[in-house]
Length: 152
Length: 376
Image (cartoon, rainbow over all chains, first blue to last red):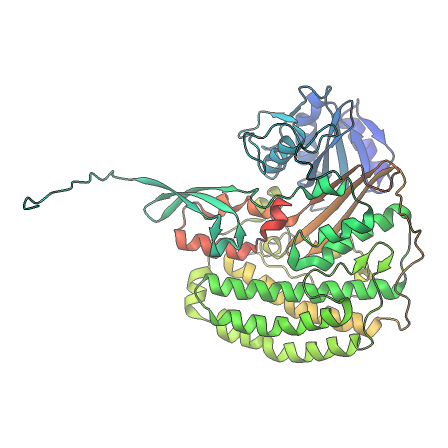
């Protein structure tokens, strides 16, 4: 499906969606409180069928964080990028998508571990790589590692 | 000590043991720990614990330039070093709108396919050994040596090549490049049937792998499983077909698909991929243009324009995604690596629950996990 057609379908599903220009994929900015319902409808609408989440990442933008979802349809082959901005960076919260995509459960744990985004309703939100006692979130821009292993 | 002491142990009806498999266990092929709950010999559930070899590659990338990052990507899935290099290079080229010479595209794809065969050979060695057949290891390594010699001749190193760089290749390949690959294909066509005689047709092997750890297509898609493991379940996820890159659009090849999704067919998918890779190699070698251009014109300092770029590449184990967020500097603002093994690992609980502990080794072997790729 072409990007223009996809855009029309998405506006019909979520009128408050904002779009960003990107050469490769269609970027959609989704409000956090609408995310779960919107992704459910993306997966279940018959001519969209976005059933394969191939990348889930987070970016620190100093004022706020974004969680980025790269989703594609295994049947039709069209792809989309969803972005969720968090409310500040003190206590960022985004709803978990573990019940829609099983892989999200573990990618969300990684984002929680390295960026400190709390996924609400997540069944098992623990650090995945670092120790449970680790202080801070390494991928944030203001993270200072005391033994100076990364920065030179 | 004349009196006899009687020790009475009261046994629970269904005692549940928690056993740690790893972090140093030969069949996890690296530092990975499975927390396995057992009832007798049956696995009740399994929790993977990773992070033992977490090096913070994504964080390190934020303070390195793009040509430097190439050398870190080798260390993800060290058995698919070429594809990892290619993924970052393609992403940088996409951001800069650079078209690399045709010959470079062919060389990149040829090296990727060679790397894929080498990786599957090592997997075959290890899988056979996990199931108790030590001879496999000698057969597989004997043939893998021939590919490593080609790499040594053309790239200068055997395992971690760092040969594909943004804009093209590090240097030109050896003049003997085409001939040595043709010789290898001729040699390996004769040797690959030996693998089938030794392992595929073996009754013990078949009994231990058939109808074991069945993964449905829906499970594969939902868990984000990619590579031969997913294609054995019927999920057509080959990035070489879905989003073709380098020289793959120029040639016609088969995507290996099975629908059974059990351990044996995950094995079969990889065996067939080795045959198919040889066909791809021959087609690429026939079409590869002559000449000696190995790089496009690049600026000495690479700065990506502001924006976000994503590149998907098919490695030997599945889909590698590189997501670069650039703010216009010579280092990336954020670089995310979507590695295939990270997603592939977490289906283990679903596949092994209800099977015996010996089957766990067969199932984890058939997923072909490389631990540094999970932890990054």
